[in-house]
Length: 153
Image 1 (cartoon, rainbow, N blue to C red):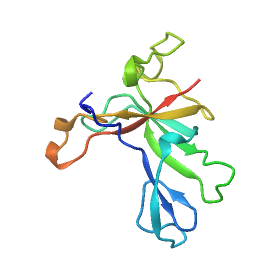
Image 2 (cartoon, helix red, strand yellow; image 1 turned 30 degrees about the horizontal axis):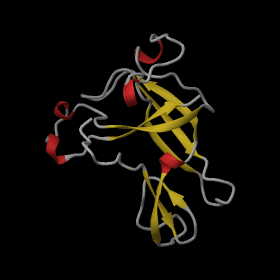
Image 3 (tube, rainbow, N blue to C red; image 1 turned 30 degrees about the vertical axis):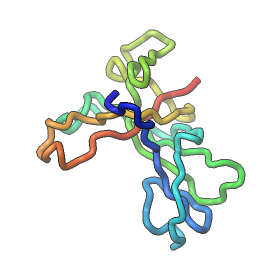
């Protein structure tokens, strides 16, 4: 959808000389180490730390809008601070027509997945996280794409 033949964007975190990883990426790591590369967080399992549903959202953002803080499991060799991200929960029809297995669309506004603390999730690309024309900024001045989180079985 809109990506043509190009590969799906990466969910990019920064890796630093001391082995730590942060999201969002920064020029310098939490301990002052230089950035040496990037990590695609789509390659790591993550779990929901906490979540909430906003029922009073800004213009152009779906209502209600469920958000989750997730923590990526970076592996046994990783000794840095937790790698966490905040993001929207995916809708059931995103990422290739995925539908929920419970068949009940009444939770979380009708078409968002339900999540709970500890649930495993995966990032899924969304070309529009909000409606570009609904805000006060010029739509061309911002990027509207990003990643949402979808539960995995």
